[in-house]
Amino acid sequence: DAGVIQSPRHEVTEMGQEVTLRCKPISGHNSLFWYRQTMMRGLELLIYFNNNVPIDDSGMPEDRFSAKMPNASFSTLKIQPSEPRDSAVYFCASSLTGDRVGYTFGSGTRLTVV
Amino acid sequence: AQTVTQSQPEMSVQEAETVTLSCTYDTSESNYYLFWYKQPPSRQMILVIRQEAYKQQNATENRFSVNFQKAAKSFSLKISDSQLGDTAMYFCALVRWDNDMRFGAGTRLTVKP
Image (cartoon, rainbow over all chains, first blue to last red; front, side, top):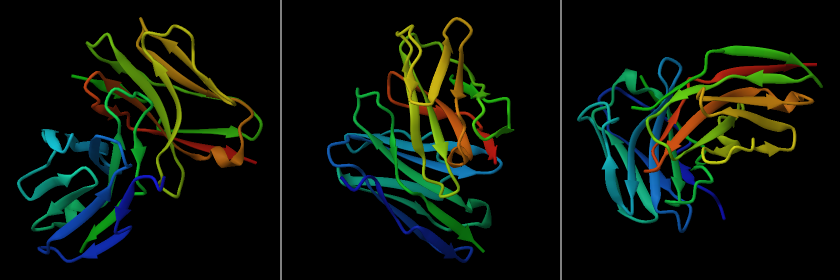
């Protein structure tokens, strides 16, 4: 298994532009999580899906952020418009509900908004 | 609400020695799991060890072991025979029944030669 695949690995964009981060979870996993990591706030859970349905999006900072999971093998996190304070590493993770072996994380996307 | 607290922002240890990283947590759930993740400079999050709350026996994975004190809500990580490759950020995490994982702020561990 290739693990959780995130793309791109790095993204540099200008303030005001739309940014889309992508994630492919491990095949068979039915839970998917988006986290944001910053020096100031650590690892924050943004949103998570179970069986492609958003369960808790209370961590999404504001309306500029949106996430979708159109099928079991793909999810996106979109920021529109982006701002410099959105600069962070964004992680996607997946797991199998009920299987408490821990999440498998992707390699993260480092986003820089200038 | 769930909280995970790591009170040691940074620690260092000499190679081959033992170090213990602290973690306390708070949850109203009776069924939950605890984890330690390692994040080296590559930024990949790597699962180190996990503990089921209903098990009294402390988990062990090679040089890594935990001291789980359920009543005190404490979950410390002990690294024996520290190696240079253990240099990383270490995160303590709590997962409750509905699969929502929360992390502590992390402890930066440096292993010195």
